[in-house]
Amino acid sequence: MPEVSIITPCYNSSKFLEETIASVMNQTFTDWEWLITDDQSTDHSVEIIQRINDPRVRLTIAEKNGGAGHARNLALEKAAGRFITFLDADDFWEPNFLNEMIGFMKKENAEIAYSNYARCNEELIPQIEDFKADKEVTFENLLKTCRLSLLSSMYDSQRVGIEYFPEGSKREDHVMWLNLLKKIPVGKPLQKTMAKYRMHSTSVSRKKQNIVKDQYLVYKDFMGFSTLKSLYYTANWAMNGFIKYSKIFN
Image (cartoon, rainbow, N blue to C red; front, side, top):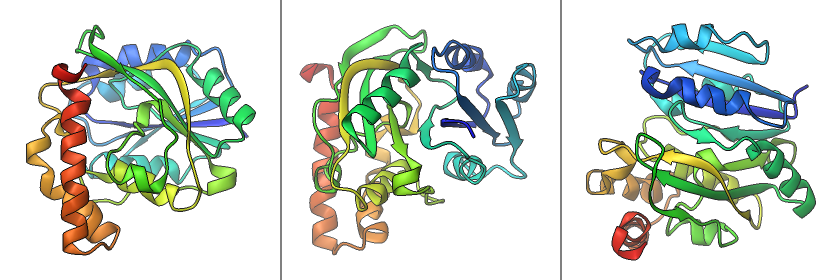
């Protein structure tokens, strides 16, 4: 059984996929499985993945395009590793990401951990200050801003179980982390920059003004909060999101 399961959704990612593959293959920690789900790509993504000559890499092709959450869930259904971590098909890990994260989690007896990550343009050149893993994460403070980024976080499935993503929401990662944090008191910060995140100008996560309603539904529908309480946390999330990405504050 592998120590780590890496979960990757892929959709039309051929432009950056080879760099992502290299970042996994160059990991100093080698006891992993990589579960990639292609979400009906129309480019050459599948061909690129199929060229990987490594039995630790397992490709699933979704029967229909169902979005990133659905693709991750298909991979999670097959995950056998104790530790679960995520890497989108256009992001990048430093070579010691897995080694550092697993060592940190065992040392700190952590059920969830997250690290710093660099915020880069499409050429992986940093654009603003690194996102800092500078606070312990709880359910309460995660309601106001999602500090847990998929590419720089890890959880122990032996202790907290496998947590699936809610399908049909553009904020599925936030809901997933909130559901995990309901089970444990705290997630631990590793204050080292272990990953690089590509900030695409057209990405859903950057267009905050277009997904305020989706964020509101995180609280109203998935957390079961009242309208007033949902509006309160949505306002906090919007302000923290502005601070997170604005060069004024970095």
